[in-house]
Amino acid sequence: MTKKKSNEELEKYILKLEKTVSRLRSAEVMLKDELTWLNMLIAQSRDAIVILDENGKTYRSNKQFASMLGYSTEEINSMHVWDWEYMHSKERAIIMALSVTSSGEHFETQHRCKDGSIIDVEISANGASYKGEKLILCICRDITELKKQKKNDFSLSKKIKN
Image 1 (tube, one colour):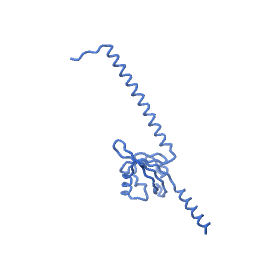
Image 2: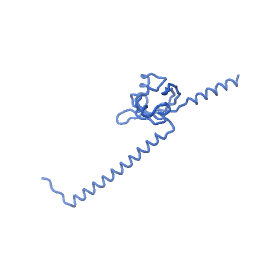
Image 3: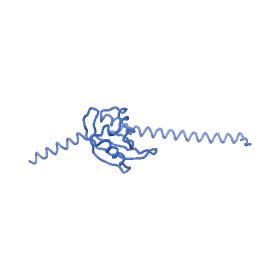
C-alpha cells in the first residue's frame, strides 16, 4: 500500500510543478520569439533564399526567390530544383545537391523563369542536417544585369584599345 502524502507535501509538490510549468512557458515564449526572428530574417532578406532537401525538393523559400523566378511562394514550395535549373539535368542537380556539405559551395548557374526566360544566378549553398534529414540552404542572386554590364564594359574596352 502507498503512503498518503500530507497536505504540506502536496503543497510543496504543487509549488514545484508550478515552477516547472512557469520555466517551460518561459522557454516556449523564448522559442517562439526565436522562430519569429528567424522567419523575419528569411522573409526580409534582400537575397532570394531557397532551402532544398537532399532530393532537390523545395523545403522552404522566401518571396524574393519565388518572385525572382516569377512564381508564387506556394508554387515554388511544390517544386524541385530541376524545375528551374537550366544548365544541369535532373540527375546532375541531384548529384550537386548531395555533394553540398557544411563547408559550402559557391557557383554560378542559370535558372529558367516561369515565363521561359533564362537568368544568370550566383548561388552560395551550405548543407546541414535537421532531424536526420540533409537540407541545403541556397542564397541566390540574380546576376543577369551584372553579367551584361561586364560584357558591355569588356566590349567597350576592346573597342577603345583598337
